[in-house]
Image 1: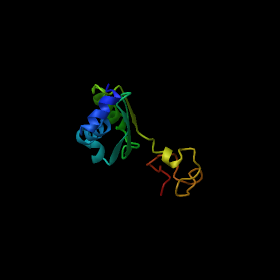
Image 2 (image 1 turned 120 degrees about the vertical axis):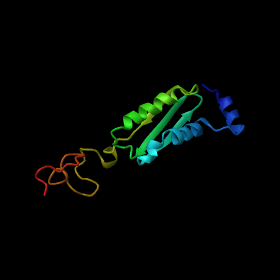
Image 3 (image 1 turned 180 degrees about the vertical axis):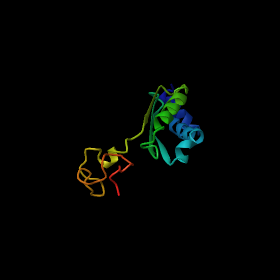
Image 4 (image 1 turned 90 degrees about the horizontal axis):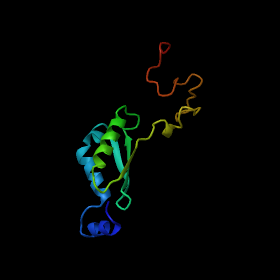
Length: 129
């Protein structure tokens, strides 16, 4: 773990900060995120505590392999000596729409009465025209 003075000295010497190095690593080593329409953002990278928080979004929301991507990120970054804790957040796409308990969709269609059916279903069922 880097001391605050060492981190400040590194930035003053023109060396990239921990946040910049993690962002650069994500871009260089995890191009699959952007290739699949996802986004990544380093929300926090504290060299004093060794904590890094990364948020995945875009195409990562609801992606069936986002858990694997998160695990790969965590496994690699935990090998860095200045990082002690990694949190990778992948928002649930239903949260941005109010979740399955929301009576109306953002389009104003009541899902409980003739709307699109169960939450997240891409198969309309045998009764669909």
